Length: 182
View 1 (spheres, one colour):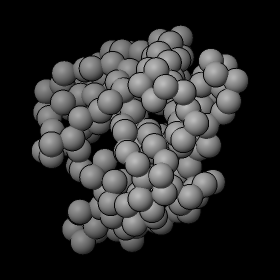
View 2 (view 1 turned 180 degrees about the horizontal axis):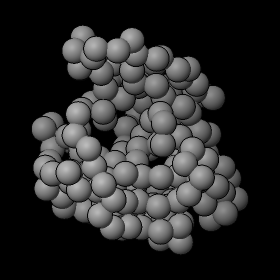
View 3 (view 1 turned 135 degrees about the vertical axis):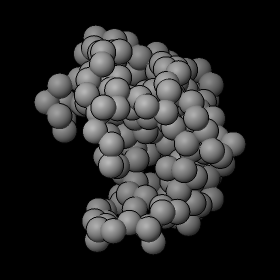
């Protein structure tokens, strides 16, 4: 596995807040409110981002959409190649997904494989009207035909760079860092 060192801070705490509030506004606008919307955070950093977007939507609309937590471990297409014993954490959905607009929330969109796994998991749980995707960072390099509906920031990267999203709930700081392989 490659080692990476911090190259630059792309988004600080205020920038992350602004990006998530903008995403919340876009979700409300595109869906003409949030009546049938459920936000589903992909473990691990997608979960706090989904809660923050829900908070922002509540400030905008006066209604907080439900937030689900999705663990995609068993849906990964590289599960059989992992040398370690994967840890499966709980998935929780506060409402039935049938007929809902599911907005998947993740930190970084890269190859698209995580999102494919998340969509497989969602479909196994119900039949939503639509699945939309919200990401804080889209760094390109797609291997699957997947695109985000809501993007905090597009960051073109090289194959020798990585994006590290840090959230206060897990990392005790809010920032997005561009890292360089060494």
